[in-house]
Length: 115
Image (tube, rainbow, N blue to C red; front, side):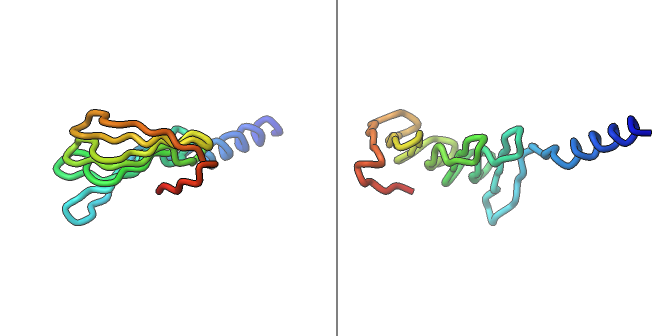
């Protein structure tokens, strides 16, 4: 009997903590909001698509839920300033037509605020 209870408890706890990590897609006007997940259920990326291509603002998170990157796509191409976060460091990368045009490093102690 104890064995059956232990097996049932193990099954229930595994069911309670399993996460659905399949991406979700929601229609938002002409765009589609896409949310991708890490294996642990935390959000990995959130952004939009237009006509099947990445379009608009995108934010990426670590498996711990910490923002690690943000930027913008236009018709599937990285454009403008992207920010990559690592601890107190922020790397500002400027993209022109999906190519890196400039890179700047910032430290939190520099007093710079970014989105």
